[in-house]
Image (tube, rainbow, N blue to C red; front, side, top):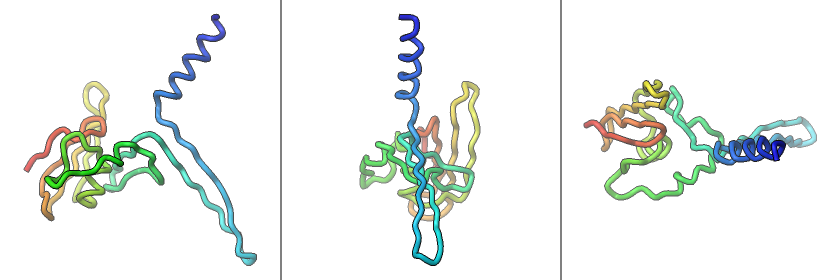
Length: 128
């Protein structure tokens, strides 16, 4: 029984954390050789300092949720907001006191001008 406990613990940790799969392949046109890498992840994609989502391919289930006609609802992910509103003017990423991810996306033009505030990849406030 003592040998099974570490196996179960590691299995539960891998299930609860996001899973990332890398696939590598190649193609040729008989004149040259091309190699590529694709990364797919079940973890939610996050916005980087450049304002773009930091995932090649995301299988993030929250991206399947439709946005309403009123715009971006609270609880949306960072990448949902960027997909809906486009790239932000500026991005601020830091850690809170409890280690949570805090992100502020600033939009200075367009229909939805304001600062979009996220805590742990969820939209918590919109400042106009």
